[in-house]
Length: 230
Image 1 (tube, rainbow, N blue to C red):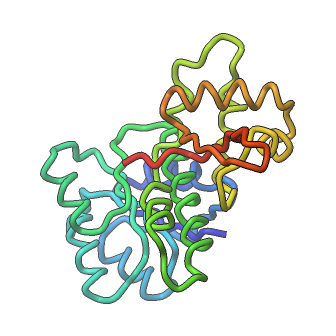
Image 2 (cartoon, rainbow, N blue to C red):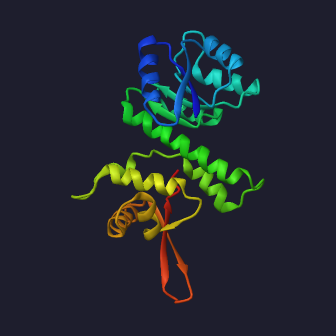
Image 3 (cartoon, rainbow, N blue to C red):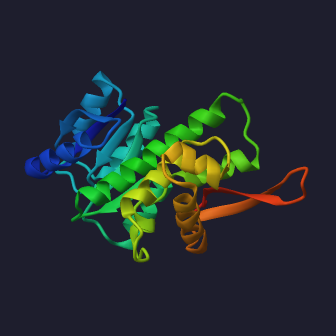
């Protein structure tokens, strides 16, 4: 279970964001804070995995708090959740160590996409972490794991379902290696023809990376993994 601290100066917004977090499988709300001081005190009492952090706090900006957390040795991950849209603030968030940046206002789907991406990042790191060192492929998987997961849901052809796209994404996310269409179909519980149809569409759209594996017959097998997007 991934523990989350929700930090927002607006009590109502904090409650809404906490309710959103509670609806995402694998996540739970560990606490709420409405100032930087409250957030720091909460983290000192009980470390959490992730902080959803507003930038505009009454006593200190969210980014100043991120920098202070790093100086104090806190390794908690941070996703900025703020109305601040200026490029300077976004760049500062990146340089300060925030993993992602979600601009207000947003709905449940927007936050869920960021949380799904964060969960994918953690799974990727866990798979690689036990090896002690990472090769380029593993490094690429880590850097590419965190992405906006709802992007493939747009502009689907007639007869394609966003729910099926999401199912296939989760299957590929959980895989430690590229999968064939047959393997994807088995793990997703769909027919092979359905898996092939969706995989081809996602590959054409740049959401999947296609690799070829050559066997004894000389005929290559198509294998798919989720594309490493910036």
